[in-house]
Image 1 (cartoon, chains in turn purple, yellow):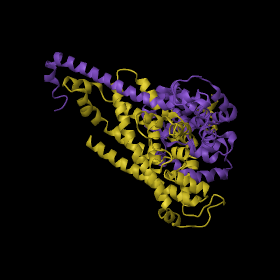
Image 2 (tube, helix red, strand yellow; image 1 turned 135 degrees about the vertical axis):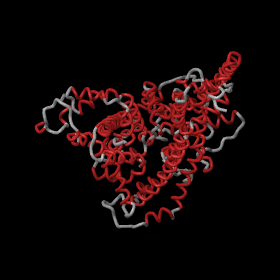
Image 3 (cartoon, chains in turn brown, green; image 1 turned 120 degrees about the vertical axis):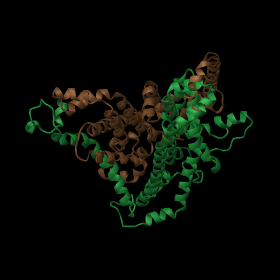
Image 4 (tube, chains in turn brown, yellow; image 1 turned 90 degrees about the vertical axis):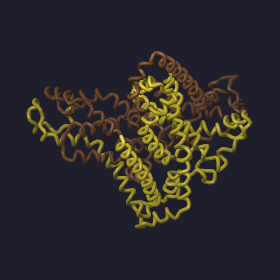
Length: 293
Length: 312
């Protein structure tokens, strides 16, 4: 029995049945919401618990009570004073920005050529780039490290950013998006004497904002949260990123749990803020592209 | 505008600008557009990939310049004969087995519930997705605290239900499940969002039609939602398996591969051999073996997708 086969005869009985089923569906959907709410709250517990602990004095963190009797921001003050966390946040911001701008720029330019220009070996170049999606970055750490060492770039922002900039997936996303834009747009611009650079800058890129947002956000979050590669190439505490910095002082606070959680909260705040601001873009970007770092 | 012209070839040879450009003049600008990406791509992806492959046949060491002496296949033979290689591979597979089913099933169920919930979708997205954007080091700090014996919230919570918690991170049997639980909490939001997007693409008319048919919500889920999400599930599954195989951060940060190497992952083994024991050539060979495993998973995925497309 298929849905459409029975559609016709069923409509005859509709007034009675439909109301009952609609009511049943409404109840069912409400139950769904309640069950999910319980899970969502469970999911939030670790984060809330971390914030809660960070707001306690160190002596009270060994008592597992939710109610904070003496809320205090001292833990945050001590973390800011005793660790280089602000410096790490700065490094992470610089590196993530270089990576993001580099990825968006290089990938969109290449995708523009692949989508809008005709040249020999175009398909070959495209498939050559797509093949790069298969190579997990983690497989390349050993040769990349020696390469960076050879270039004298260890302990610089460039060592972290440069390998993250060429992202095959980003080219793919941009090309898909550009292919969907109507040709007529650039025909008009070309009549006016615009060259490719002007078409790229003035016609295509302004229209490609959703693709730019998706690629930029993903490049930023991936770069910000990466641990393995920065851990290898950044040993100088002055330019460590936030994941590397936190990893190196992890455990340094011993049983001072309020300070440890204060550090975790401070380390999480910038990206959580970015997330809250761009929630819709982030979610749509991931949903639309299905990428994973 | 200067930016529109500086990167194009000098204008001296160019024809007067107005008028449509013809196909034969297209080659050079394309090279200019492709160059920034291709240069970086060759320099930092393809170059290192080939260099790594070459290195895997040499006794390269981190402390000596150059490739070192030719080793032939001995790095590969060493790796395949090494108990450490097999145990770290096994840990990685065990982690993948522990994380993949819950990360698919829970993400699907939560997305299904969220799709039907009349309100508050932004809140569910926030609750499930926010952990995904936390840096692994922050996740490690929080969960190390939650698992702390005698004091951690998990032990205290289980005690409320009269359950005795294991010494999560100190017990070789429980360390991996503990890391899996942390990972499920941390990364579920990604799959949740993929499923939610897949569900929103199902035409509402299908639900309305089936509802007129007299289908209960439960029947709708079984007959409409689940079958139409087949491709999303394949995508989620393969992305999840590859992501789980690449696990490194959690183990390195929470257990340091312990207790007694019980949670050392394949990537951490590569890291240890290459950068702690300076056996760079050997580590390159390990990377190549790991690469082959990831490629095999991708190949299986492609064959499944192809079969699905034939059926549709």
